[in-house]
Length: 428
Image 1 (cartoon, one colour):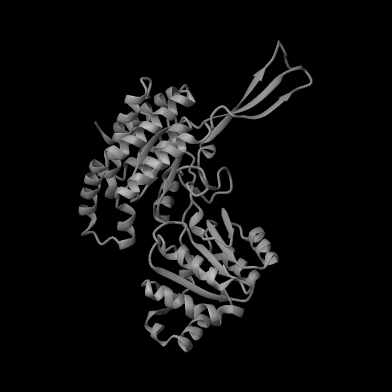
Image 2: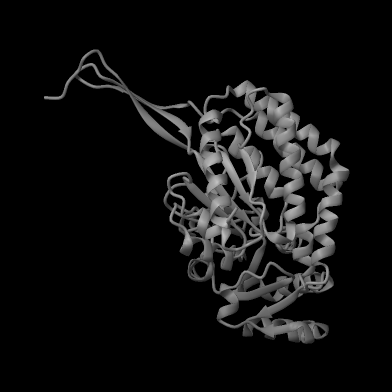
């Protein structure tokens, strides 16, 4: 079978499954999800064995420690996948909600109801837990899903998907056989072929680095929901609680630096820079974070922390646009909240940005004027996540302005249709 025939078969099977999925009851879908969660935990050893094959294969490839961390599956992460499935099962079914009702003067009754999108392709890199997250959300929202993970996680992704499919079959006699499919080949040509099949595929969502997302967007003939990169900021205002600011900044940068909601640039008001920067720089240095700084930051740190001199690099214009996904951080001193907002709106990626301050006026200005999918006051950018937002797992984070924006959960995976109920009305 040629690659084109393989992808067409996957897409055609998904289309058939999507129609079957749309007929499942909420109880039926939930029973499958709960069975899948239990199966992931029961088969944790098999998942870790498959993951070990992937880890061994990439260990010599030169991937950064942060990227290797994204690939690794352990008991804790497998338990988190199962927990995510149970949370999705506990959420309200997004399909069949009445979004609008009206009666026209001629007596025609109109009702707008939520419906599944249909067939969704998810393209992602490294993180095999996305397989479970994406499959569960698509399944609950009545969408068939075709999963295309990175070649570095192929064994892990196939193991997770197969365990979920088998559990679904055991839990529900009418489980659609091709509701969840994994592209079985690593050939890059599979993606443009798959995304040309507009008669079967309704939507594509790429998750990964900017290069992947741009490549998918440029080749796709089906709609793409995307975020190109996560250049996230924390701004320490002149009226910040500096202890809180330090804790938030550290969490935003080092808790998981390889994810899209990690901080890439720290902005500090010049009024508190002399006090705040030496303390936070020392803590970042202890965590082996490389600092790329503007001239004002360099002057402050060189005068107070001579041990940091070798760790400081001058930040370039391009650095402020860069998503590092690593232990690298830009630091810049700014003159007030307006300067911070201007910097974020120029260099940011409209993903997640935070202000730390006790000044409500400054906070409200920041929240109103920063044009990002998620904007925080006195909280870490790391909360931009479907699970943290109470959506269960998430299928991705959108920085688009049309359609979904921010973490995408169940509601964002639905469309709608109008039902018209009459008693013989004709238009004149």
